[in-house]
Image 1 (cartoon, rainbow, N blue to C red):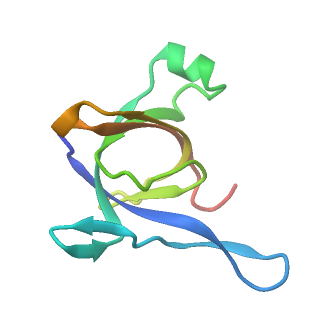
Image 2: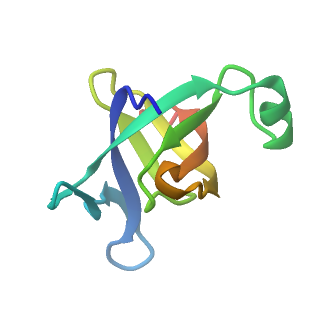
Length: 113
């Protein structure tokens, strides 16, 4: 599997009172070292996946990764381009040594607009 991009993962964390913010999630292990980055391959979603996931055309993507800790609601920030994606769905495929995860992503605006 060609994992051609590096993405940093953020998860919602409670602050004080009713506030929450995204903070870097560093629970991934690579070569015995804890890391906040994962290797990922991101592609535009098919029309079928866009319709099934109730996504928007040109904003819905499919990603492949071998990192098991990515779950719905997390944010992926792609290194180098600073593209921001919200994880909308996750499906695991366990094929022995080829185990991987397919993520449904929605491209987000980093300014929140």
